[in-house]
Image 1 (cartoon, one colour):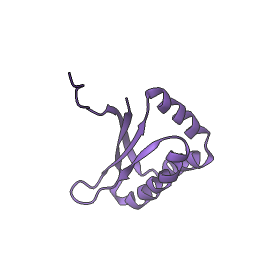
Image 2 (cartoon, one colour):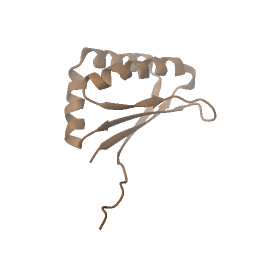
Image 3 (tube, one colour):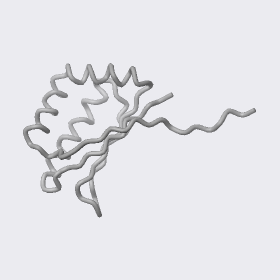
Image 4 (cartoon, helix red, strand yellow):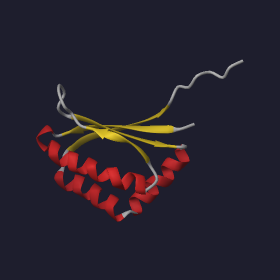
Length: 106
């Protein structure tokens, strides 16, 4: 069963460009650390302070291993530091999802 981490960010709309730079860096870092990146989404119209990131893993154990690799990765640490210094993320929520699949025939 694949697990998808749905990350909901509340961002400072006046620092959206900084968040987008942060998200772009993850496009390379996450796959290198073992995550199956579905993507990041920025506000376009309507609400201007909500962004999303989705990453899939074969299991929660694989997610935990990924988190350990991410903390040990120099580029990952640099990106976390960038976010902390620039303060464009005002809040973050993580939800772990599984896909609904068709019932087995029979």
